[in-house]
Length: 190
Image 1 (cartoon, rainbow, N blue to C red):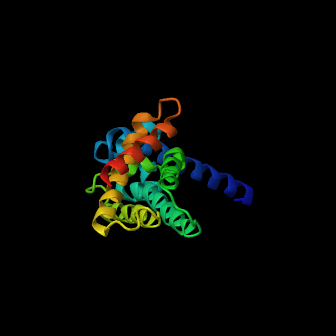
Image 2: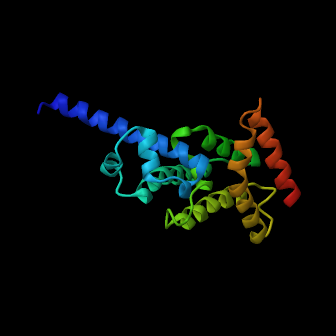
Image 3: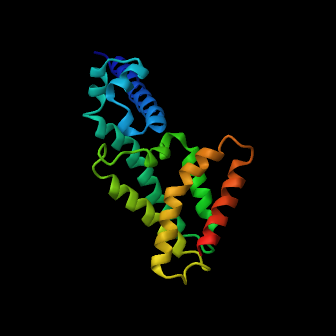
């Protein structure tokens, strides 16, 4: 087989792989991971179930491929935050909006994964809460709060930002409304 033919096959395989991920993310965002089977994904992606298994060992592997990049992105964002001298809540809100708007990251799934569908989901959730905690600790006016309070704030951010963005995203200036709502929520908890 020629190299160009192999390249075309490889490109088509990658396109099909991304299409399956996209369909899976869309269905899981609506129904949660427990409400979607590999058969559902195959049907909506217009492929045979066997094709799903050619790309993913099982449902957990498919979910993992969508969740890990979001977590890697969070780690990289935290590293970049080390360079910021005057951290603010708005910086954290910008990050939340960035995650929401980057559809290739499938951030919405963080709130739709059933722990039975992804055995390490608790670790990923704790990792995200840790990122928010570290960002909060870098805000001068919050750095004096006791650790217990900062952990509560980090958990609230993690559990609130996706559902809030999801409910506001159809509104004009949703990002401004989100920033205002999250800041108000944080101020009421401090």
